[in-house]
Amino acid sequence: MAKKTAYQRVQAARDSHKISTDELIRGLTTDFFELHGDRSDGDDQAVIGGIGLLKDVPITVVGIRKGADTEENIKRHFGSPEPEGYRKALRLMQQAEKFHRPILALVNTPGAWPDVDAEYHGIGSAIAKCLQVGMQLKVPYISIIVGEGGSGGAIALACGDKVFMFEDSIYSVLSPEGYASIMWKDSSKVQQAAEALNLTPEWLQENGIIDQIIHEYHSGENLGPLRDFLANQFNELANLPIGELLRQREQRYRNF
Amino acid sequence: MLQSRFKMPSRDELKKRMDKIPDNLMKECPICHTTFFSMRMGKQRTCPNCGFGFRITARRRAKITFDTFDEMDADVTVPDQYDDKKYRGKIAKAKKVTGIKESVLTGIGSLDHQKVVAGIMDPFFIMGSLGSATGEKIVRLFEKATTEKLPVVMFTASGGARMQEGIKSLMQMAKVSQAVEAHSKAGLFYLVVLCDPTTGGVTASFAMQGDIILAESHALVGFAGRRVIEQTIMKQPPKNFQRAETVLDHGFIDAIVPRTNLKQTISQLLRLHQREASHG
Image (cartoon, rainbow over all chains, first blue to last red; front, side, top):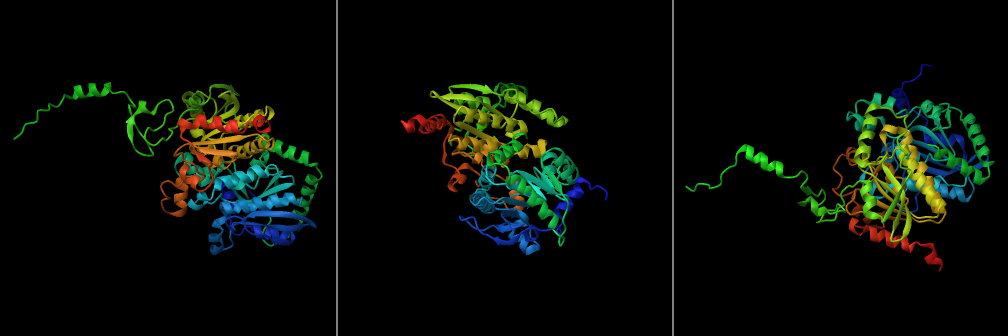
């Protein structure tokens, strides 16, 4: 297969036929029980969370998800969480820590939802809390960038022990459109921006930002190998004494 | 008919007179639109009418806030790997304007005989953006404070992530958060002062992680840029939706303190957090 250009990768990451966060959760876990709400303001549909078994081990899953159709996409703001979504994720991650459950975070977001209410409800503060608490959770914490990993809204749920990316995914400080508009005041230079941003999994792995690239799973495909892979990764992390786990996590980010 | 006795000066004469008027003699406040003589801003650079704190360099802020200030990590600067010519030009200019080598000035300050580790972001250094060396300086600041069991006061002023450094800039949010949390877990006090403007990745990390969060009057505080929000909601956002006063109303800031009272307030809060005082 010919190598995709950076911009083709952007398009592939945004493809509407891409495997959804919900399907990944259903395929990877059994007995999944969805949990709702941030216990404060509401229940953001862009973030799904709950508990399920990953090869018989209970884990907490939080995920940012796009919609399957227009109606769902409007409800989920095309995969852009509101502050309530980050607070829901945070609540469930802290709950995971209490019950010693590993955490799997699935990320597919162009970024946090930029509107007036999100500002009023403290979107900055919500992301900041996810980072501050996430970095110190005393349980194994793995993130997968499934499609788009856009900006602060993505790193909020990608600050754990391991960060993986699907083959057709991107991770960047800003969307290529936003970058082109800020750097060159010309949002049509998207392709150039995609190149400049170094947002491909290959570049990010070479430069130590992510740990590994995961083969692209399509909708309907057997997720068994990914399930095995994740179970192994969680096992390895769970075998570390907590102090060592936290030390390694700290070191992972201290080097950036 | 009444003849005007006013005699129009010649063109040359007018130009001569204009040249005598110093530049920047008058200033207009962007918040209350009062026009006043610049000298009335005083050393603190505030609007004499509404108290808005104009953007100032980190060096000036260190001078007006602390009794003494010993700079740390003065030579930490943008890594050489970023060799884009345009970016390099911006860095050189920023260094010249601000007199510092990255967008944050860090050091140990004293205030009414109280020692504090301080970070001051400089809005004139590429908009106070969060470069990897900025993150490095802030992490070292927190590490120093944790080791020496000292409180931290951080003045934020930033346009957010440093686009030129891409994903490395984004990673600083996690890196700094980690250091903040380690300092917090050691039971130490972290005070944030949000200055104009505090936005983007800085708002979404260490600016919102303080034990106490203060803001200067009318400072712009928000996450997403106004233009991005405008494009999303397809209409103009309310005029003051990202001003400190609005953010206070929504519960994300402890207090708004005019710059002229800031020194006294910081001193008071440091005193209230002295461990010796609480244990007797």
